[in-house]
Image (cartoon, rainbow, N blue to C red; front, top):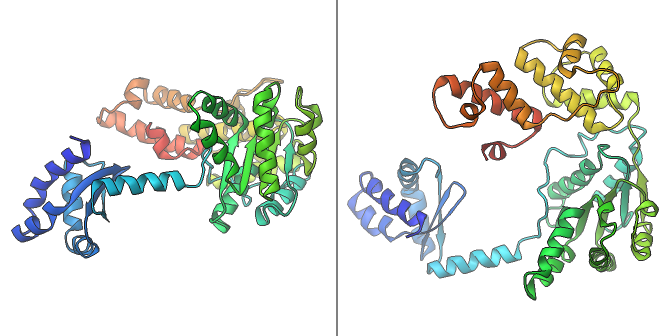
Length: 402
């Protein structure tokens, strides 16, 4: 017996206590459980009239009973299907026909929160033009520059813009490593797998690939990517690529790929100047609802490395220290939080850093902090930890729960 069947069987005893005998026998018992999706129990019935009656008159009591049996189930979906088999067949067809997906797109990476300065003005304008008219402007768009300068942000900004303004357009974002690994995996999974792989990458309207320098020294992957590239360009589909160097400097890359990469617009992103760094820090502190004086922001900017990622990493450490120690953000706190000396390399804040700081602050073990004990001495620090991770790491709570 499946878990959803056990859940429904147990819930029936609870439902019977809250509805009339006629409603229970004529309606509730006629429903059939078929699935659990996230926090939702899926029930089916054979007619829309029946489903509408249950939804209007009995659904709330059914949800209450199911939640009592399993608190993680907070919703019930009532669908119309002649049988379980029809439901599963429909679900499979929807899965097969769903738009292709690659890596998750971070919704926080948008054009609106991309700070524009003299160093990145060109990539911003080009990316915005591509998002507004995919396939018509700058195809392919090849963005290159050092690590941590906002290349991934701009790719995801394109994806998020299209998701909101042109939801009918199929967008696929993936890293070059993912493309490579999925291609290699497809070769070892039978005859249909390579075809499924090609369909995934070639049946899209916009393809966004991050870090194409990793195509270097991979001849078979380069061949596959070449044909994918050609197929999309011939169909006037948009391609946007990022790289840590211009195409001519990618080692052991086929000339036919190199020339195609150079066939659109090459956009170079440079490290931000001081004014842009201050603007980035101001924007990020506002996003985290934290006020920091301009002289403090200037101090952080002057003492930070050239790339945006490490700049934001230092700001995150400072805000974290302020919230944990309950102190205002001053230059003294910045020095204390970063503990920096000339030339010292600062690492980005990690989830484990936050867990360690919170456990040390509250004098409890890491296992108690991340465990399931419900004593107040553990739940309060746990809530603080979740809050800090959510605020400072931009991670959704479902990821934290894992």
